[in-house]
Image 1 (tube, chains in turn cyan, purple):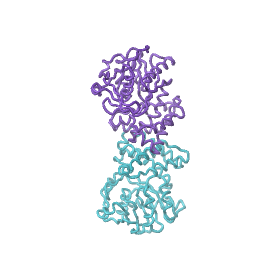
Image 2: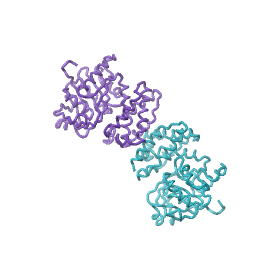
Image 3: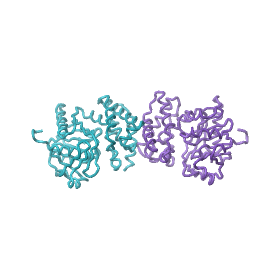
Image 4: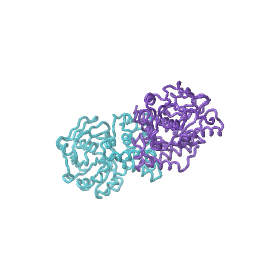
Length: 317
Length: 317
């Protein structure tokens, strides 16, 4: 980053995640450009509004908003906040909006999401992954509620940087963007480890919100669902270890306690289910199960949850 | 049984199971007396009606029907078709309706249901268990639909018979009652083994019907739910083996194939859930899990299913 010149940032897929971080970055003075489809007209007319329990009401109006990536200026950073299931469809837009040597950062959960997108991007683009620990959801076109948290863990995946020091420098640069915007962020030396770590939360809460039709507060209030959450967390940690990724012994307990202190929250998978959208089952369940199985590690409760959710997902559409 | 004298039979809890077998026995010439509570008036007025896909329409009218066990004549056999969760409440009625040395037969699923009832009965009563493989459900007061199957496996639990040969003789006598009434029945030398064997069907289909809101046909049509059913069956077989009960290697496959040929069926637990009744989770999940755990055998998918169902059951009332 040249001194004094803030990089230009493109947001690909402006849902709750893309909208929240995009607005935070724009308010910090970054030149942020938003690609939208279904909500283009609403945001062009009324801007983006975030009701944040952490930062207060945040408005961005006017918004630099585009219906087509072809109209966007070349961006140094592209933040992808769309669902993992739409990455292949979005690849052409990402390529179109990218400046030379741009950094593409997937703000998505699950395993292997970069692997699926990588072959669709030119080799000159850097690809990074970001794990957002945040309670945020879209309540209407261009209107987002931010209930709690917000930190981002960023790791380098692939691209022109092969040297670990260079890779960390780019991950640090991404984390610095967020911190400049008032968002806690950290560069992670191992993206896969960071993705497994995030699964410790996503595997139990996303799936159980759909399976049991329940948000975090009732799930945390019942003896049996608490036991199930803890057992699922323990299986994620075991799967990560089998795949060679260490997760700190107290990390699951930290997330469990954090969720108890959180406001009542409906995870994104519940919103997807209730809107009859495709669930991100492959990224959050299928890939981790396959990775663990490939090294001889069975995760039976996660597998049962996945099988049940796959049945529900198929019936839901 | 004296030659030429058919034993008197009392039905304690005339739902789908008690009603079906009671009517079959009455039509075969047995002197059958039915204890009913909520449906007493309807059955006293209109009799019992079974729409059977196997036997055709079956009507019993008038019915020897009682609102109070105190009014029943002493019965040689008492068939209990109520839910396992109501056994303790029904114990006084069972004792009241029992002739000297009567045989009490629990037509119920799950593990340890006799253990829970035994202390509430005098030692002079024989206690047996019966496992019904049948697709039957109540459609209205005194009106039952019988869709398929019907066989009963009977085993002796406890009472004045200590000798294994005598125990088998009584189990055979029970099976003979059913066969006289045109119902396939078999005496089992080991009731616990028979109960575990029945769990191979009940554990997957009862629980998944509630968890996924699905009857057997859609559950058998989807790749993921099929895999989950088979995994749950395999865990039941493993739990049985750990507890010292052998289940034939092809038994789970037999039940799986049989369910594919069955008409679409909603298991009883689904009806209980939809009517906001207490689910038989302890008998069908809690006890088998505890028995297996006591001998060091974990059944993780069954445990996950139990934890999820327990959450749903608690929320449902």
